[in-house]
Every structure is written in C-alpha cells, then in structure tokens.
Length: 535
Image 1 (cartoon, rainbow, N blue to C red):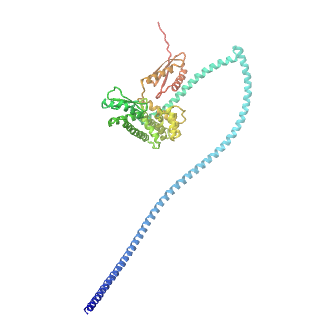
Image 2 (cartoon, rainbow, N blue to C red):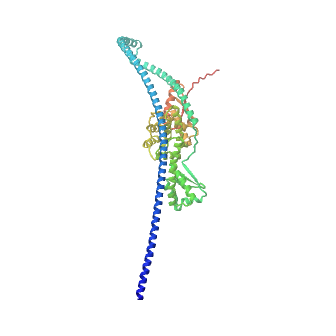
Image 3 (spheres, rainbow, N blue to C red):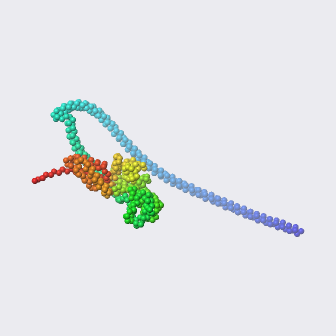
C-alpha cells in the first residue's frame, strides 16, 4: 500500500510541476510576443523616420542640383556669348580683310587693263619700229659694202705708202691697243676697288663694330701637355709601381704618356688628344688622393673618370646652347662633341669659347641683315665641330664637320656654311659668308691667338718669299706681326697702273699659298728719286 501511495505522490508531484512549468512557459511566450511586437513597432517607426529623412535628403539634393544646373547653364551661356563675340569679331576682321582684298583686286584688275592697253600700244609701236629697223638694216648693209670697198682701197694705199704688210700693221696696232687697254683697265680696277671698298668698308665696319661691342669673351690658355703636382717625390715611386706595372696600366687605360723625370714634385701627361689628357689628369689626381695605386684600382678610377668627363662634355654642349639662347634640340653625340672642343685649342685659342663667340657674332650680324638669327648662331657654334674628331678622321675639319652635322640632320644651309667657312667648297649663301667673316673676326682679335716662334718666323719668311717671286719686286718686308707686308717695286719696270694689278696678284697668291689667322694687308710702294748735284 505504501508503495502505491508513494507512486501516487510522485505522479501528483510530476503533474503539479508540469502545470507550473507550462504556466511559466506561457508567461515567457507572451512576454516574448510582446517584445517582438514592440520591436516591430520600433522598426516601423525607424523605417518611417528613415523614409522621411530620405525624402527630405532627396528634396535637398534635387534643389541643389537645380541650383547647380542653373549656375552651369548660366556659365556656359556666358562662355558661349564670349566665344560668339570673339568669333563675331574675327568674322568682322575677316570681312574687312576680304573687303580690302577685293578692293585691292579691283585696283589690280584696273591696272592690268591699263597695262594691256599700254602693251597693245607698245606692240604696235614695236612693229612699226621693226619695219623701220629692217629698212635701216638694209641701208647699213649697202653702206658696209661701200665701206669695205673703201677699206680695201685704203689698206692697199697704206701698204704702198708705209711699206708694211697688213699682218705687221695689225700686230703694231694690237700692241698699242693692248697697252691702252691695260692702262684703262688698271684705272678702272682702281676706281671699282676704291668705290667698293668705300661702300663695303662703311657697312662692314658698322656691322662688325656693332658685333664686337655687343660681345666680349675671355679665354683660358691651354697646352698640349699637362703637369700634375705631387705632395712629394716619394709618390713617383708609387705611381711607377713594382717593375713599372702601375705606369704601364695607367698608360694602357688612358692612352696618354706619363712622363716621370727629375722635375721635383711633378709629373707630365702628354697626348695630342685633349680629352684623353683631361681624363688622365683627373684620374691621376683621384688616385693620388685615394692612395690606393695598383692596376685594378687604376682601371676602376679611369672608367669612372671617363664617364664623368663624358657627362661634363654633354653639359658643356648644353651650356653653349644656353649661352646662345638656342633650343636644346640637338643630338647628344653633337652636344658631346661641342663639349669636347673645350679641351681643344688653336693657336692658343680655346675652340669651345671661339665657337660660342663666332655664334654670337653671326647672330648679331644676321640680325643687322634681317636674317634668321637662331640659324646663324647655330651655324657659328657648329662651324669648328670637325676639330673634335679631326685627329681620328682624315680631311679638312670643315668638310669633316659638315659631314658630321649632316649625319645628325642639321639644316642644309648650316651644313653648307660649315663646309664653306675655309673655302673648301665655294660659299653660295649669305650665311656661309657670315660664318667665314665671324670666324676671321674672332681669330683676328688681338690676343685671341698665339703661335710658336718657329711657326711665326716661318710664316713671315713665306710671305716675303712669295712677294719676291714676282717680277719687278725689289724688296719686301713683313711687318705688324705678319698682318701687313710692304713691297718696294722697281720704278722703271713697274708703272703706277701695274702696281695696282700687282697688289691684287700678290693678295691672291698669298691667299692660295698660306694659312694664317685674320687678314694680311699688302702695300705696294713705287718711288721715283731724281738726284742732281750743284757744283
């Protein structure tokens, strides 16, 4: 029985707990439903609020867009109005030009009509004149026939009276006429030369004087050998190296002779190639400063220095273009060659600075003549470009330079001016004459160039020998450092008129036989002395 009671109690307890749990579940479920309902209401409220905000934002955006659109339309309208006004002005100008052209064409048409009438009148006059000429020609033929008959009679009479044949008389007459013609020709030459010199000298002095006043340059004297100073004589041993390996490596890498003699605290670099000499100088100075002198280090330093010098040459080429105010539209190889001229000299004159000066002078003279200044400056700058490679290529530096710049696409006028500036080809353009004149002007400036004593004396001797080779020359003296030669002629064999022709012949012979900077003035002196004694 007690077991049944226990079982009943358990069942009753289970049922009671079941109902209690069920009630709690219902309460929980109802509270969740309330929360869900409340969340839904909140979501709906949020959604309504979001929609209201979105609607308001859309309205604001639409308002801003309308405002912006109106501003853009207004701005576009103003721009169109301005453009329309500009176009309208342009059209008006074009209409005015067309109207003027039409007026000009009308006047030209009238002039052409008048010309046609005049030409017709002239044609009629010419036809009448031709008829008259034909009649006169017939009369002249008849007259010539009569003259020929009279001439034959006169010749026969002259031969009878003089006892000379016709050929002998002709020869005598031709000799007299030749002397008279020479005399007249010498006077005419003198007159033409005087007039030409008077006019040309005035204009040339004006242009050249202006060019010189507007440009002045300074020059640095360069040599064919370079001396590198050392801190002490012990450095010479390190430069030579064990069994001379360092000096051999240095000479092989640079292509320059390294001369080490008894000169205290100095070594000499010798080479005809100025660029190689500069590379060698910088390399040796860097090696001395670094202190590590051995074949591997020498090759490394030389390669680095060579690269630096190449960069410096390109920079120098660009600097030349900047100084002449030219566009840097030039090939890098040409710029490098222009820079290489900085290490080259002619009679002691630095070629880079000479080329820049010639460019300036060409530009100044071109501006005075109304020519293209940029083209003239470019031709002047490039005129000696061949000197950068003339030790590697055979031929005249002018022809080498012309071929070089032609390869890199320079204008034909510039190519011709470079080729003709030493008369290797005949100058055919005004630019060629300008470059030639500017080159001579730069070289002839006092102090610009210098030469060795031996070459100077040899040039003076050659000038005097050329003068002495002409008939009638008694003595000749080269003075003014070879800028002038005075020629004394024999009074009996050379007349005043012949002296004029002799001066021209001497000038031509010197021009074709010698090479010299600037100009040489030839002065022919003919003197007659009469001596009498009173006793």
